[in-house]
Length: 223
Image (tube, rainbow, N blue to C red; front, side, top):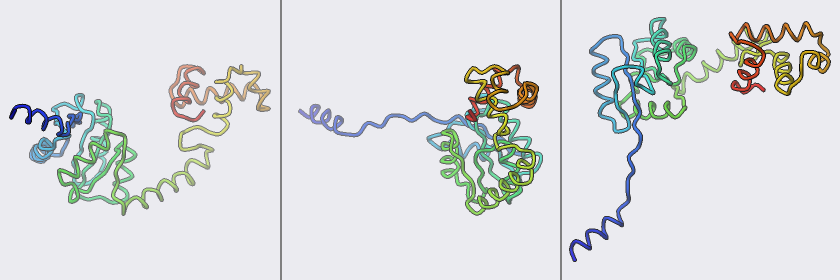
């Protein structure tokens, strides 16, 4: 009877399915900092620390400030296989945030705010495609983005995705099966203009041909 009661009790208890842990690589400016941060993260149940960036889903870059060397570390981890990079910086201002974002970081934390639990939560969120940024620096970043749009992209007729409106119009028609003459007729361009537009796109994005250009634009979500 006692065994039966224990079995009934187990059936009433909730079943906790194990969650998939996030493979994390730690990069820091010195071995002591790296070892200390790695030890803190190993204690987090949602993470496991790996020794090579190729084995990681998320990389952590710990720096004193996001300078040129920090930016290189971010780009290096992305090249070596980390899908997402989180930056932990001692000093952080709007210039450092912009440099980190430009280099490919998806989340940024001040070191003083990066408790092991907080950092673990940010790493899990990064693995799921979510970004994190100190709220007081978000306004500065948005201001910098606005200046980039007004002062650099708009004068060149570019959008944030790197395409011009005319390029998008041409690629949309090519995707619908129009040939060069039909695109020119539809948009009231010369055939030479259409060819030049397609050449500009393939050259700027290192694409092989117009079919590759259409595929690239589809993946980018512009057509």
